Structure formats: structure tokens, C-alpha cells
Figure 1 (cartoon, rainbow, N blue to C red):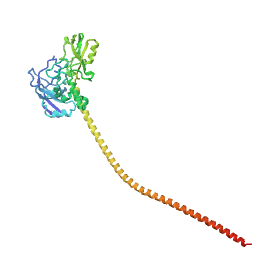
Figure 2 (figure 1 turned 45 degrees about the vertical axis):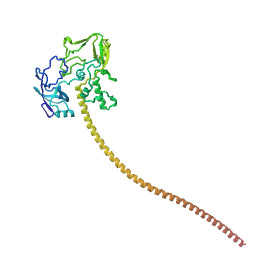
Figure 3 (figure 1 turned 60 degrees about the horizontal axis):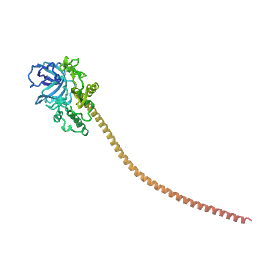
Length: 394
């Protein structure tokens, strides 16, 4: 890596041995342009990359085995190419982690892949281990896998249901690598259950496609699994592979069912096969999810700010309401006091009115009695006067 400026990187490509046209190694097409300086001497050629080529970049770290790609720095496009010197720029916005890794200076040399490296079952088997009936890809070492995946080895035997979401995911990932090629654990999805089968008769399978293209134009195989890359093709005479009676191989569930219907095979034992990762899609998807998460985070922060603003207004309204309630409570207390005084006075006046009414009634009765006496006396006096007058007249 020769330099960084304004979002562009300048790379000086190394001199590497040319690839044999009929090489059988499917990883050969994805080999990094910048080779290991300690590689065996071979006729060298300057590997140039044409402008507008899309490449995948990894930062390299020193390892006892040489320089090893350890950090994915992103997808780039070649903007300029002059012999072994190229300039590249990201095809889209890099993640914060990728930007930090590029600017950290920890990766003075980069691996440049025209085709994203492929996932593999065999690559994770312990060094020197061999395939057997219980481990078709070789023995999986828990400590080595835990170190590679940066996962606590204790999660290899942990029940995911009793863990946090993050640790549960890590446990499932680590266990999927450990169980790869062995007996399927309980609850394994059907698409990850393969079968070791035995052929009951000769059965030919076509392995070379009529189509031919470079792997960078669409992969090594067509949709049916036949080779399209010239370096993988077996040739006209060996375009078909014939399995003999008694041969044993491992097939996916769908193929097993198809061949079983043709009475070509019998099932021997189920096998757990980890689903391989499409790293090119996976890195893009992770980047998309990170970008979406960051955008969602900005939106959430904005909405949170608005909610906090609204909460502040609501709290202020509550405080005003509480102040108003306090004043109303004071007014109510004073009103209750005044009402008590008025009620007491009203009661007193009611009693006074009642007493006055009783006194007036008694007085009225007395006056009525006196009147009756006066009337009676007046009548008696009148009668007496009339009697006296009558006696005098004769």
C-alpha cells in the first residue's frame, strides 16, 4: 500500500507466479494479487488490473505462515492502472470500522481479490486431521475455532436458550462450526441435514457445463453445480463422473430424495453440514444493515429530541397545573372555612327565626285571648246598658 489521499489508495502490486491454465484449485482465481514475498521462486509476471475492475481488499498481518489477510477493508473499484501501480476508491461509503482500520497504519500491505474468497468446510478442520465416518471434513478443534471466531470456547457447550441474545448467537455460530461434518444435533434445520449414501448401481453425473466463462464473471459453477471455469473442467473425455455400486458419498437432502426415487442409492447416516457463507453478499448485507442502523439511529435521536422537547412542554404544563391546583386548594380551604362560618351563622339564624316564630305565635295567642275577653266584656257591657235603658223608659 503506497499511499492514501482524498478517499483513494495507491497500491504497488507484487510480482507473483502465473496461474496454470488448467489448475484444479478453485481458490486459484481468488488468489491475492499481492503475493507472499517468501513464496517459492517461479517465472514471474506483472499482474496488472484493468481500470473499472471491482476488487475486494483485505488488510494483511504478519503470521508464522507469512502475511495473512485479517481485516476486510471493503469493496473498491480500480480507477487507474499503470503496470503494477493501481489506484482504487470505495464503491460505496465504508463503515466506521473499515475507515478506522485503513487509517490506523496497522496494515502496510493489502491483499487484492478480484473474486471474494470462498467459504470452506475443510479449511476449519484441525491441521493434520483426516475425514472419517464421524467427521467427514476432519476433526474440528474447539480452541482453534474459538480463537479464529473470537468466541469464548465455553459457549461450545452452552445452551443458547439460557444466554443473552449476543452470546446465544455466538454459541450457535461456534457450535455450527464444531458440528460441521458430524452427526446432526437435535433440532437441526432440514436444509443442513445431509446424508452419507451408498450407490446401489452405477450412476453417471455430468460435472462440466457447456458454458465457459471466467470465475469473476459469475462464479466457478452454474446453477446446477457444473463447472464453468476452464481451470476446473475435467475435459471432454471426463465431463461425466460415474459412481460405481458400493461407492459412498455425502449428498444434500434434495439430491438424496431424487436419487432414492431412482433406486440409485440407499441412505447410510445423516450428516450435519454447516451452511457456507457467501462473503461477498454477507459483507454487503452487513454494511447495508450498519448503514440502515446508523440512519435509524439518527432518526431515533431526532425523534427522541422531539419527544424530550414535548416532554419538557408537558412537564411545564404539569407544573403550571400543579401551581394552579395548589392555588385552588388554598381557595378551597378558605372557602371551606367561610362555608363553615356561614353554615354556623345560618344555623343560628334558623334557630333564632324558629324561636322568634314561637314567641310571635305565643304572643298572637295571648293577643287573641285578650281580644276575646274585650269582645266578651263589650258584649256584656252593651247588654247591661240596654237593660238599664229599658227599665228607665216605662
